[in-house]
Length: 329
Image (cartoon, rainbow, N blue to C red; front, side, top):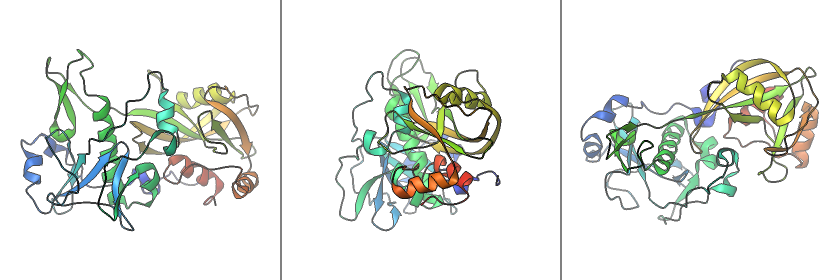
């Protein structure tokens, strides 16, 4: 097994700019930044960012934005650059309906983009377009990935938390987009991240266990994953999820790396897990199929089109390719 997967190996984990946490509480910071020519702004909406054809993430000067900006609640401070310049995001208010009542969190987190995330409708000038972060993440530079991931995560949090969880009153944006304050009881609320484990399960013959989720398109296979429950360690979550979904028992668990996954608010914590049993019985709810693959079997299935591997932007792809020993093609 090679060394731990470092952040720069994972597209959405790459370091961006200085997050400028101390600047968030400065009165009028965003207003002042918007008067500076060096400030750069990206546009974000429902998991998508504006990109420029052939040049990645589109960043604009404060007076060059191709969409109108009204009010103060749509601004997010993403950080500062090497020369002290501010990086901001504007939350474009073209919103799709909230998720249906009863829709499982796993659908939002793990579904393919076309199944859950239509591009925003806001029109843009020629040469610019809305691109889902899931689609473009693997192609962004470290600088761009850090900005876009933070913007998508904060945008999703604001969209889902307009009201106080204590009393139900409306909340207002504070700290340059990094908190919300209840207008009735004054309580302050911050973005939350839901930890989820994701694991490359291998057996004594060095085969890997992959599964097909119920809501995925035919042919799509990936590593097992699941949310960490209250009062649970990461290692226990790995063993519980594998057993619940496939009936396979796991012994040794080792950390491999982590990746922010802002769809809408997860942190994927990656592991290699060693199975102590190999009989597979899927739960039929989250997974409809699961099976062991040798390297030769997986390579052949991918070449034949029978297996669609995880997307290049995901830690799942990194975990599979680490086990495989190179890129899947």
